[in-house]
Length: 127
Image (cartoon, rainbow, N blue to C red):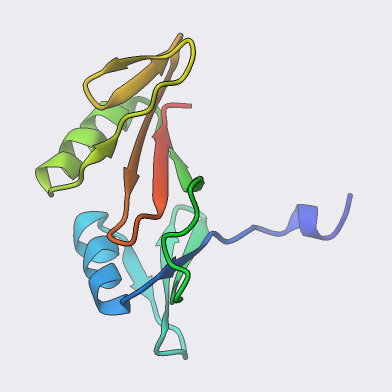
């Protein structure tokens, strides 16, 4: 086993404006910031992980999912709570998948996708 296999990885998300991003990550998602020494970087604790948010001119250019949360049976509740805060959910057409509102269903698997203000794609899955 390599040394990297023993160490937690950290999602790193580029944003255009850290002030706008902080409002979304802290107020909308409810993440708590961890102090950093850099003014253009904010770390957020999420479970046993840290999400690093930093200013970048390339923010939002990734067209794939950047962060996924495994939320179990709380998926529907979290989707409704985020919708109440103005989050708009993405809808995709995947083979073998149907949609129940904003939640994609494939057998026992349930998934929902949304974007931050810069267009970075986030997902939540039930397991």
